Length: 188
Image 1 (cartoon, rainbow, N blue to C red):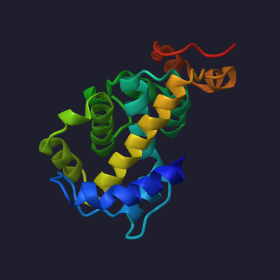
Image 2: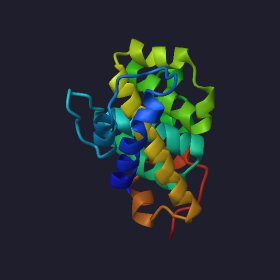
Image 3: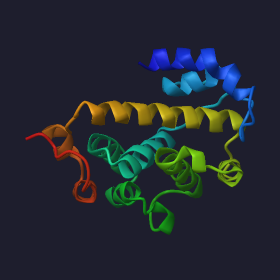
Image 4: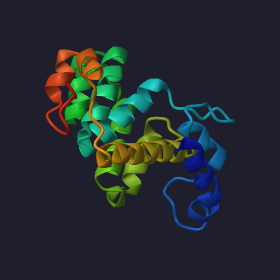
């Protein structure tokens, strides 16, 4: 699926990136496709695992209420940071502080959540905030494509009734399990 999405992205990239008015430019289709595959693109544009994890947890788990992704990515975030930080991100409370996230990660989480809830509501100020934490236009476009792909995967999970399996549920720390009050209950 990722390769098909990357191919579609490559085929349509010029029309949406250069034919319209975008808030972030100068990314190429190879950069976005590499990020979708979890690889570093030529030119050094890459998203580290914690940034991607936070984007996924924010966009899918909190805003989309996808329990499968919440357990999977919340558990990963808990291992990368701590269980309380993961629970706060799942609930959309990381901006209040008191978490292990730095300002860059909180900004990326806010961007992911906004894309998941209402991508038409993004503003030039939202993109400027990403630039302010050191993301260049190539990375912003790649990050946005990555988040969109994860939203698509989450939609497939939800539409086809994916249940978090018992092992996935059991592997999540208590704080993560307690934070997830949405979506389908884990399989028993």
